[in-house]
Amino acid sequence: MARLKMLRDGTHRLPSLVGYLQSGAREHDRARKAANPLRALYGTARWQRLRWQVLVRDLFTCRRCGGAHADTSQLVADHIRPHRGDVDLFWDEGNLQCLCKRCHDGAKQRAEAQTRGIDLSARRGGGV
Image: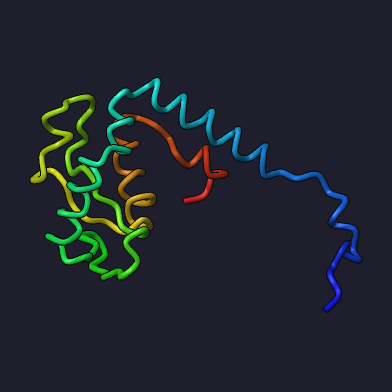
């Protein structure tokens, strides 16, 4: 079987954006960790165990929309009351709920931003 050496449309000549995107994401993560040192706790084994306990407790069902999800990568263990640097509140299982990524990244984040006085519509191009 013959190997494909070049793409006919010339896309093989386009520069790779993978390195650019990865370095940009790394810088963004570093800035967020610097702004909130507790962010590093999300990568710990303790957090992963706590997250799993919350997902099992809530039966892998989003508390906001009620949708059940088999793909756990689409579920978030979300803090009901933002911890804002309070370590005890961060680890409190009673302060955690299961949300799907869509609910967490959408309505929940907009609601939290409004309580902090931040306008997220400017970041997303103006629409709701």
